[in-house]
Image (cartoon, rainbow, N blue to C red; front, side, top):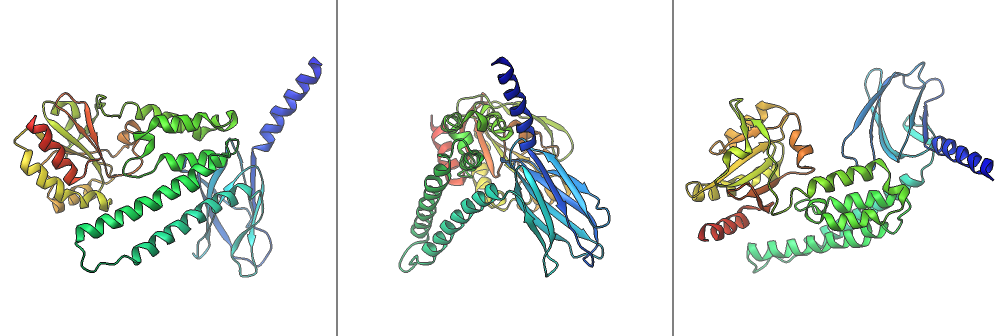
Length: 374
């Protein structure tokens, strides 16, 4: 009996390793376009960061192999001699995939395990259908004899309704497949919504409960660990917690600490020159800043730009040099504060504690009015 158990354990271990082996080959045949190189972008279920591999084909053929710990999303970019690049993207699991040319000399996947890929495509198609429904509802809005404020409220109500349907009828439905990777994928997408107030930060207990309801195999996947890491970070970013300090350079290259601005209500605003919604909010911030700058209110902008020139051009164009502007070119704050989407902001009290998150112009104004009355 002991020998049988040992044999079964060895079979399971080697079987598990073999089952997680991905092989991609291709292309084949003569008279086709000549390949120069292939660039492979890959992501795990969480899709938090891409990794890059380069393949140098030999006589127009290649073999790409990886040991997988979970399904991965692949984008193969084929560079042909003379230009005319082509791209193929798919979700890969264990098994052999073969990429070849079709009759029109287009790249296609001839074989491979497409079960997981098809499940995610079904999920994404369902979401696309809801978004089409949203567009139809918005088109049918009657603007006659209505104020702009009234119409905007109706638009937001419709958007919220569709978003709730997507969450409840798609993302949460897939969580029922608790022993399949698709459940973790759906949970990650659900946790990141809504983008203005992501549940992974605003409702960490809900996300943690769902995560722990998944099967042990799924909970041990690498992307599940990433979710736990974000939940642990989120615990320190809730209202009432001290905002973790960080030191970054300003427009003159002088290093500034967030903690050096204590004694005031401070809005920490994460933005970037390429983020239109971020910059759309600046006129509102300017109005609030002008009103309360002498009453004990400060704004600290933290840009996620990688190039200083674009950052400084945006500061000048938008007229936001009136408050401190810092830049995080190394991505320190993305990790420290689990930033996935921007704009994002935190309002700190004079002691450095978080008192509110993601306040927009009008809400920020009302919040400060109340605080400065107290």
